[in-house]
Amino acid sequence: MKRPPSLHDVRAGLRRRSNDPIFWNDTVQLFKTVAAAVIAWVVATSVLDLPQPFLAPWAALLVVHATVYRTFSQGARQVAATGLGVVLAWAVGGALGLDTVSVAVALVVGLVIGAVTWFEDQETTIAATALVVLTTGFSQNDSMLVSRLLDTGIGIGVGLLVNAVVWPPLRRRTAVTAIDKVDDRIGRLLTRVHDDLRRHPGTPLQQETVAEWVEETRALDGDLDNAWSLVRQAQESARMNPRRSARQVRQPQQWFSLLHRMEQAVAEQRSMARTLGRSLERGEEWHETFRDGWLRLLEEAGRAVQDADSEALVDVRGRIDDLARDLEQLDPLPLLWPEYGALLFNLRNVVDTMDEVAAANPLGQPPLPVRLPAPVLRRDGTAVGSVPADGLTNEDRAGLDAPSASGSGSR
Image 1 (tube, rainbow, N blue to C red):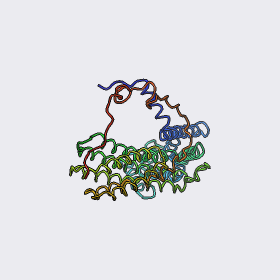
Image 2 (cartoon, rainbow, N blue to C red):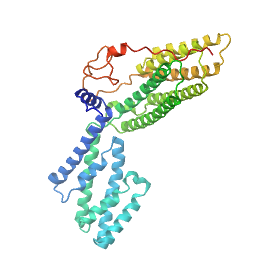
Image 3 (cartoon, rainbow, N blue to C red):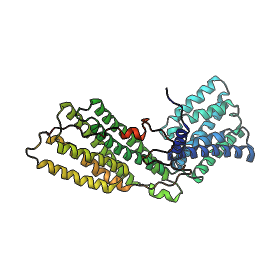
Image 4 (cartoon, rainbow, N blue to C red):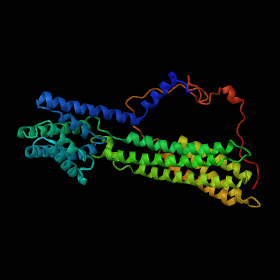
């Protein structure tokens, strides 16, 4: 039975949310959307005293988007779509009156016009606007046509103004967070492969373990796709953005380069996992010189990637070449030398690609609006007041045997 969340769990969850830039972007955007709709309603009712002013907040809700550029581009489409909807309702109402046939005609014509490519995300806006205006009974009143268009213009204008002036969204922080997530996960996968190989001394790994490694690389592909999407969104958010910091985000060539490098690292990790899988199928033991040296380098590379330690990665890169030379000097040459070469090549490529990624960290995130203090840590790295996930105390762990290297042969 799953235990209820403790106070520590609740605090940890709040801390994660407070440090999540995507959460803050969504929260700010939510309040801006609500503010735009409310202001549009107040202007339409209290300032201009327009009759039935519901189109103003509705238009404001539809026009506030995640970026200033999209707000303006979609705003133009919204103006055209809503205006056409009002005119369509006025024309259909004047010609056919209000009945089932006129409603059907307005919807069909509105949807056909909305299917034009230029309207993009406004496919149903024309039909929906025409339906609302027609069924409220004002489509046959010429003066109400002007009122409807004015309502719509107020909502769109307020939405554009609020999104462009009140903390205009710049998605830099979300893009940086997504990139950091990928490189950390690449390092964790290297460490996991090392730990899995060390955890089973003298016994072959199960193919299920190898399949989990490969599946993790596929999950990394998904993270990379998400990072690319957020980087492109950040680039779009800098267009037409008045904030001074938007300039450096309009052409984020460094981000593009880092993502390309991480794509290569993930491909190398997948190749490494499959090479290890084929080795496990044959059941042949590694030469101790390669086994000890390669596993040590694998662990250090994973740690250096997670710590964004470019100097440590340069050191690992040099020691990979040293290990290759040591293997070449063995007499006789190990039978599994081609396999060793493939694994060394994979690891070297991962280290080479991640070296510049590590050197680029930190990528310079702007401060979050609110940030909860970090927890107080014990010497073992766990938070004070927390319960370790494995349920073991430090005394329990002290009694466990340290993992040893996998295998003991000399092929």
